Amino acid sequence: MEICTIPEPVHETSTHPGQARILRDESNFIQNVGQFYNQQDISDVILKIGNQSYFGHKFVLAKSSDVFRTMLYDKNWLQSGLPEIILEETEECQKYFDTFLRFLYTAEVNISVDSAVGILCLADKYGVTSLKNLCTQYMVEHTRSPLVKNALNWYSWSKALHMKELIHQCSKTIAWNAEQLLISPEWHHMDIDFVSDLLKNGDLVIQREDMLFRALLHWLESEERREHFHEYAKELLPLIRFPQMQVKELISVEKSDLYQDKELKPLLKKLINKAYRFRALCPHQTDIDVSFAQDFYLPRNYLDLAVDNVHMQKTLRYGIQVDVRTYVGSVPSESRDGEWKITYRKSNDTWTLQIYCHESALQGGEARVQAVLIITNQDDQVVQVEESEVTVCTRGTHLAMNATVPDQDLSKNMAVLFKPIPK
Image 1: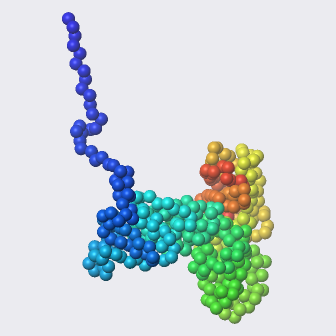
Image 2 (image 1 turned 30 degrees about the vertical axis):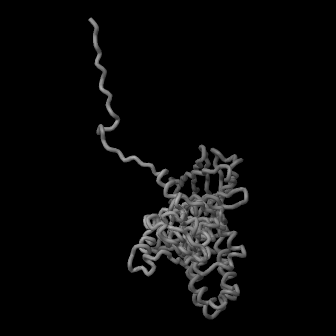
Image 3 (image 1 turned 90 degrees about the horizontal axis):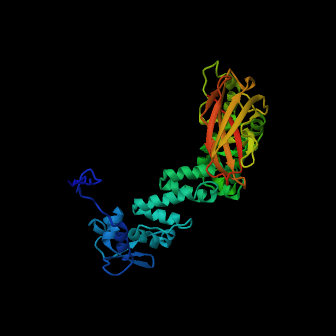
């Protein structure tokens, strides 16, 4: 007898057989719309910018921009319904209006360092969010350290247009390369808002606080600030962290011509007295109820705080302990009596540091520190900064941190800083 086998039914992969789907042909749609860019065929509006005219299509403009939609269809708009609309643009924006307008038809943009600001301003003005986001992504990528020039050029624009991500990236790149900026000719031409923002930044990588104070003096004394000297000095001097200066540096300030200025002396005297108070009371914080947690008292990323320098591509430190010294407590001192040990380990692109303190590094039975890694390239430009959590170290505890260094070829040297953090 022949046995007939009935095959199992084939089940559809969808949980709902025959369910409707949405299919897309986006590339063909964009291509079809793009072919009408600046073409007179079926154009129903002309955009005039300076001496240049563009054939536009109301539907394309209105679907891409709420501003254009209002201009073209809102009866309360003066030019609404006219066959030609005159747009007022800056010279910079006029240069790149063609690129901006083409994006509305093609969803593509040809952007460069030179054109980024012009395109960004147009995207912001006409409310084209997708283009503004693309510009932001490009500018963030092209302001990463060591691209300091771009960061400086775009910082004011990022603030004017409230672009938080770009503000953050520009600020970081500028902070990491602050030491070179402070001695550059460009420093003297920075405006008051930029200088104020810089002095408020706790992440500056500089040799020491006194260097920042001297740079501020040079900026204040430049010819273009003469008219507003006292006004700017009163605003900016409180942003200098005098408690992080050495005693001899504070005395130098007291002997300076600036300190003898009748209008500024009361302010400087108050700031320096706060520095001396910090030096007197901070070592006894465990015994008295006093706080020094405000930014004014906290250290920045001072290169003077470096306890070790590692040649990252030819290091012999893997798996061994290195003895280092720093000053004891949170008050800056030239004495390096605090003893520490650092153990380095490396796995692929991740560095691990284990940091242990000796009894000599403790004040009141503890040491409150933050470890900072300053990574530089072949040209000694800072390309990465990694910070540990603020850690209270004792004889029974230690500080541990991991740092991923994605670009091994770019990274040449790693300075290890110990920042004593007052509480």
